[in-house]
Image 1 (cartoon, each protein chain N blue to C red):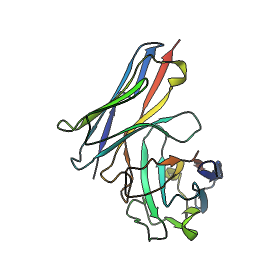
Image 2 (tube, rainbow over the protein chains, first blue to last red):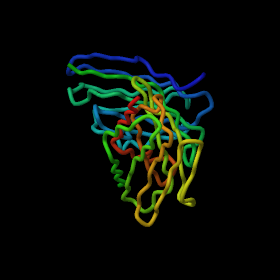
Image 3 (cartoon, chains in turn blue, brown):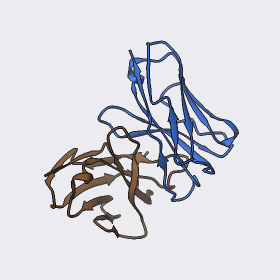
Length: 115
Length: 114
């Protein structure tokens, strides 16, 4: 594809509901990252996938957050029992190699609003 | 872990003037420092990066300087244009974005006054 795509672009949900956010990385990119951007803040690193390897989940803010990457390509970030403090823009990025100085290409993000 | 501080949070300059954004980092092991530009409603886009083995890098109107001793790095934009208006983020990493990802500053909203 032309770039990293994310869906949905906007998601409004009620407190306590579960949400799934999807990321399609650039074709051929082996590394995939999830970040969270709260209003007026920088980007907070959440999780990183390198190919089919098990991810390092230590950056996830709570056990309500989980992520998976199927077949080394598409990734889904799931937030269970959403809280108002989960409201943010969730950004996905991919790069061609995860352990070197390679540019991370970002998607447009999913804006999550928890009412 | 790494901590990145970025200043100023907002910067307004006249079109044609220069803009400077400064960042400091805490982890002396960090060796990769990218700068991203984020326009409204879009994801961040890399505009320039520098590695710890050099002190300065330039690309047309954009330059970045790195002082490893003081643990700070700066973005310089010369001859600013209206399309330079955006939010700019600095970041640091000691693996170039591996398992620890990038640690970002909180961003600088650059406003170019016509």
